[in-house]
Length: 266
Length: 269
Image (cartoon, rainbow over all chains, first blue to last red; front, side, top):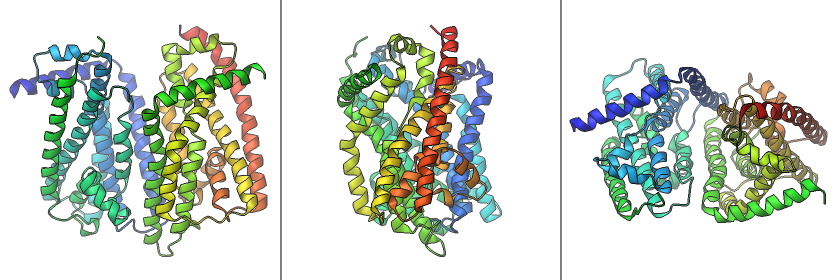
């Protein structure tokens, strides 16, 4: 365990050093992050210049949701997407062989190799916006809700990680689809807005079948603690069960896939 | 047939075969073109029912359904991605091989573009049909609106392609400017009417959106095909605006291409 933490620290340090070599890039990237946030705020401004409420969510609620979306969108590009893209490439090219030679658990190793440091700006900007929206609605930021929010965000990231690990593991069987990650991005797109905008049957599907609701809507709702967001008090329990189940299932699929790996072409 | 047309036909056939090979991959790209407008329809439909009048910028739920269904189709026909790729072609030097051929590299890219749109039809047409069946759109075009709308869609797709290519040529000067693709995308969303009809944008954005060429690529053909939104005079002026922008972009392409190639020989190898 201590060794794992020290290794993660080492990988992060290498990433930070790589990043520090291209300092000017950071300002370009910061500009891009701000651009994304600006686009999302313009979308909110557009919606609420025409209506008071979006399926019960008002502008303050939506600011929190946009913040959460930015945290997730940036966070996964910081440490999930770069690692999983690398696994998929390695499986295709056969350089996965080298990874297997390292005296480390394969799933752990593939999950912590790379960190895109500058994406932290997305997480910080998103968190600031979410807290601002919460403060604007409630006049204060109640600590218990923040704790619940952090818990729900961890569950959200765990679910997303499990999805990406599964997609990466699929490459053990189907090598040829290069943009398999589009499956995730297509589904994630539905999480831009509260799931209450969809018809009831689709809300059900987006909660229980494809748990998009747990990725953005429920974390935002847990910070707000407002009944209009339609979150039942059992949701945190569901979230922890779902996250755990997703993690175990994806890890099982990954190990099954690993057994099929025969060194494509190295 | 002259040389560019023969090259175009050959590239089209070759890319048709490539896309058929990678149909799984192509399917995943084309799904996005259906999901994004569908999500936006759900959002605007909820927004319309949350507003006091139930109507936003002249659209109620059923006409929002028509708008975003049409936007799916227009978005598919106008898809262009050179602005995302040119940086890579320049950086990696792959452009060199294309430049050795006796026709402009553009013809290869147009061939690929058309092949993509034809191959993906077999995925997107059923998805459009399912979406239409679920949301029950309200269309009311006159026959002249259909005719003008189809012409506007063809012109719009040429416009989108050319603008994407012209913006992509910035890669000759700044090959690592990957944010350019995102800028093109964001402008097509807001200034093109893909996120919302332009009339629904906040008042301080509307004049900017109207001055840019993006609305002529996406919103104009969509409005015509939805029907009942544009007068005859507005339609004629719109078609003229499309042709005018096309002319501007053709000139811009020729000037920038010549200047860019000089830079390219100096940069990469």
